[in-house]
Image (cartoon, rainbow, N blue to C red):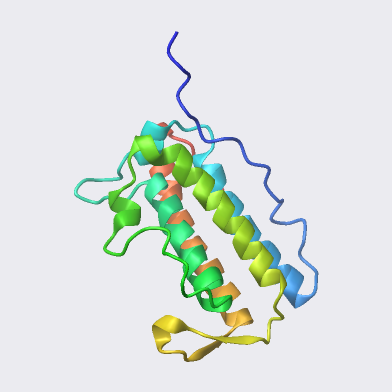
Length: 177
């Protein structure tokens, strides 16, 4: 009997309307988590082949590509920039490897790498206050605040979750947040 194909697991999601009154840090952290969970939710129940399915050729946009891209985004902004681990390798090489390498055979490993990067990002962010600043390497050390970075990540996820909505609907007709 052939092994069961890998399928993205279901995700417990935060009710987006559960926390509407809170201090600024709790609100920002929660909104970022909701966006992270939304991307995982859009992938839930899909096989590796479905995750790697491209939107509309010649575009290489896929749910798996988004997971890989956001793995790199998390590493860039939290591990490399905020935590200053400049010797840490990129998650994927430059030049579009996050999207170009989004094949079914790497889906499970890419999904696991995304989850591991999220955990590392959460641990790093928890050590900083919103008003703390760090030098951004890709801006030649120009400073950014933790507040700005967390809001930037919310924007990044919001943009890509819009892509994820369309990709998921194309794959199996599933819609909704």
